[in-house]
Image 1 (tube, helix red, strand yellow):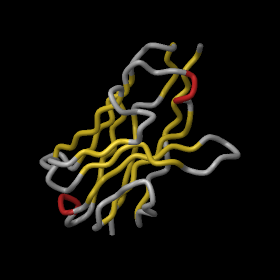
Image 2 (tube, one colour):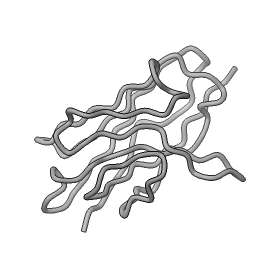
Image 3 (cartoon, helix red, strand yellow):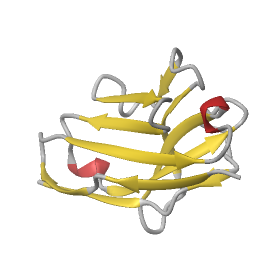
Length: 122
């Protein structure tokens, strides 16, 4: 079992930055791929970024490539999402996810956090 708790969301002006954190707990969480998805009300949840268990293989949605950076610290069981150059289209609830298999756009990870709201004002 893996538990995920997100933090770091909030209100930011367009062009600004935020860093999301997700604390993972569970006996073998360092063996899991970790990822971030986001969802706007009335729309499907969409993939944002993911990272392998080793941290060596980050993967991004086209919409955030060059602006967002995913990283993980296995000693702290934490995954981060550094978001720069934010715009109004990035406004969403951001969810942390975990799965024993690699995470990508088509994935439906087994474990999810409760989500954290990110609002970008234009």
